[in-house]
Image (cartoon, rainbow, N blue to C red; front, top):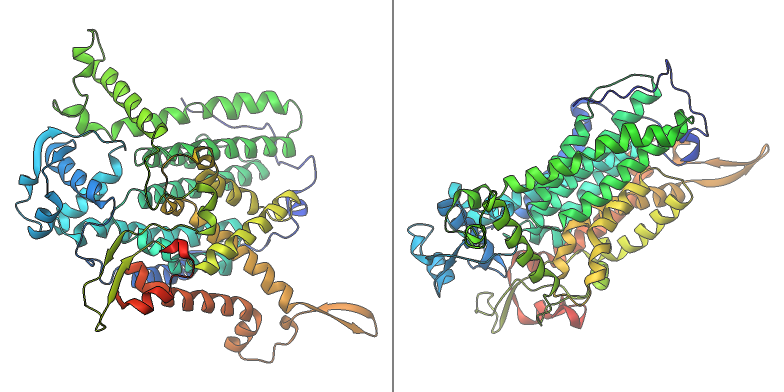
Length: 531
């Protein structure tokens, strides 16, 4: 059913304080349109590719939870559902060169606890490039690069700033945790990608509605809203924690709808909000659910998948397949809510933003570095400047949101909270710090905005003249060449990005698994809890 949004106005006029006046720090000038607006994002994407693609097949090993998702992906491709594997399957698969690997499967269904979409993605990488480390990691690398580009574009739209968008993209490109997660076949990177895409559609929907309401233009369908629901469904079909983003983004969307009506049409605003915004939004969970259930297509088409015949053997009636899936999900929920297994790299969610306990994905000590003792480790260790500075940046965004100084602050904080806060209620559960890849795109957006404020504060100074105290900036001194002038206007940001890049270079061997002399490796363990 098509809903027509009509405010019964010829030219909307705000009934309360104008948004531009409320958010006094917003950049009013719209950035460059067309292909030029993509330059910064593509530069950030190029940097991301340079740091994620080289040596993608190394180490030649199955790292951490790749032991589950690599084989699950292959099983989905070949059987439509996850089968169990024989003992020693990892070594057999690595030795196979990506060929004649079906002997690693037992033919019996395997009990798995995550939806299938992320494993399908890993499986298709192996279908294209072979069942090799490169094949199962390549899709994650592409998703990671695309995430960098999307982050830059979303930050640009949120702030009306090419510079802030580019800085956000570069920071994500340079972050060690995101680099490692983009080179490892786990589910958290596609989860982060789909949630980020949904966030982008949320912002597009907000702007679409706001611009048309402001100009008195009616519209029939909010396509970006449905695209958001679809990508949230994809996120949930990767990991259930996509539900946290669905709840947060849905609430923020309805909040914006209400404030828009309050601003432009104050009469009967609550009734109109329920009728024209809340009621149609009730269809969004249906889109998410249909998308999610569709990802189980292989399970539905099989006869031997885990719990596939539960409905038929436990009572009779219609919808046995759906009853079986419901029962299976009850088992999965029980697993997740009671998972308290001791693990040496278990990390309390309260410590994730502080990066106290990173997860070691791989460690080897073969003498491959030219020194008597070597260490080769892959660890998703975030860039300290981004992560520790990001805490301050997020607190600063909290201040901007509370004071209504910058309209980008609230959505970034909501998205960050969706990726982190729900986990705080499961502090006793076995969780790992690399789950935070879901919220690091919003951390770098906060950092980019904070750097923008720092840059302006450093460059703007007050001088006294005969006419009194005036504010001047380097914009008042146009004698320098364009390049020097640009540098003069942005040198604090340039220094910050350079410092981040130097730290990325310093920690990069740990992100990708380069073999190092033991003493060199140990010197990079700044905290004892990193070992």
